[in-house]
Image (cartoon, rainbow, N blue to C red; front, side):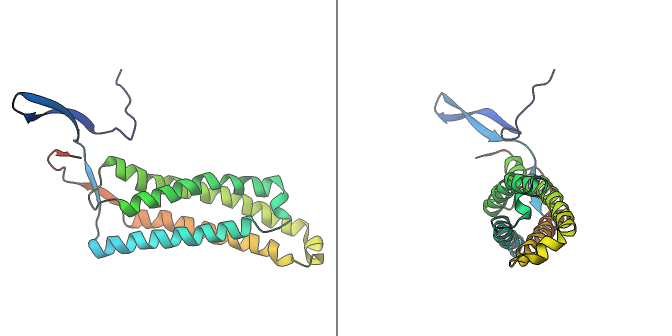
Length: 193
């Protein structure tokens, strides 16, 4: 049975390297594929800037509607999934940070921690926020007379609009990685890192 390798150590091997005369030292060397966006340097910088801007706007909208004193926030089927979306949003921030510092030719560790993480968690977060959004819309329809009587009825509306904006940003983040995929490039000769 083959030994399963963690993504962090995938395609890394120890190789013996001569340090001095008759002395050998084991060194960790990357021997796998390299991944790269099919963009020039300027296009790659624009992609990274777009992800940073989208993440900042996403966090600002998410926190503004989540921390608002909305009545719908207190209901489990609305607030629960939306609060749970905080976990994938943290991983999205980590993925954007990894993408920002990634070199143009990424080894698998960088590829996984940026591209794959962003693809997975943007859809998971969008799904969780969508569940809360549907719950908020159902709540607003069922409790329309109570909401109209509130002096801050706009908070309920902002909750629904803000969550739809977050879903749109998350889906666009996922789509950008489908539009500009990072693909295998010709494997380089073994480089020590």
